[in-house]
Amino acid sequence: MSTAVDYPRYVALLRSGGVLACPTETLMGLLADALDVEAVERVRTLKRRPEGMPIALLVPDLDAVAKVASHIPEAVRQLARRHWPGPLTILVPAAAHVPALLVRDGCVGVRVPGASPALELVRAFGGPLTATSANLSSEPPVRDADEARAVFGTALAGVVPGVPPGGEPSTIVDVRCEPPRIVRAGAVTIELGE
Image 1 (cartoon, rainbow, N blue to C red):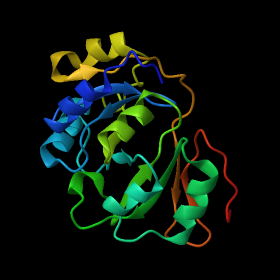
Image 2 (image 1 turned 180 degrees about the horizontal axis):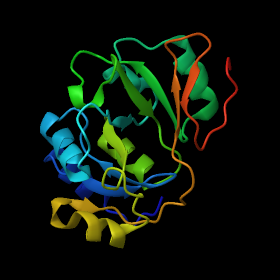
Image 3 (image 1 turned 90 degrees about the horizontal axis):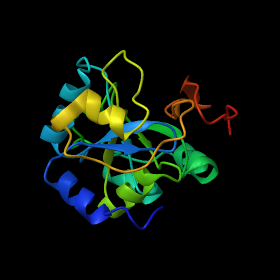
Image 4 (image 1 turned 60 degrees about the horizontal axis):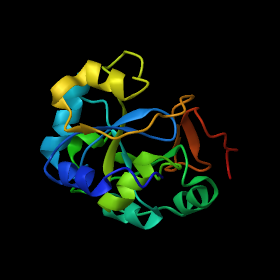
């Protein structure tokens, strides 16, 4: 991505518990250190997200899934080889240390985002970040930095430059069953049993 973006500054904001608005390969997202319980709670509060609605994660690569999963089913590896980096969120069994706000039915959703500032940022950060659309719950996602600032104001630690292309959110797939089950249709089309 653009060399003009000061990723080390944004990484420092994330490490200090801040929440950033950042373009992903689809929509603007709210990114925070996913293993920092207080940062995850800030994201939930910013969105006014009801309790019990988990927040998915961005990871820098397939190997990083091991930081948040109790184990990695072979179906994850197969889907990741075909669709990552890209807008495919895969539900994996959550590791015990993953904050409860990210987990539902023992699972956490993970993805390596497609080419975008979010991919550059999660790689620079080196660990999992929250991956939820930048919007108030039940409202449309914000489209750009100006809208993010208008909706969230000074509660954001920063806004990463760039404009997401828009379109469908990520596809969500549950690999706990055979064949894997599509939970939410989205930007990636997959064939069941891939």
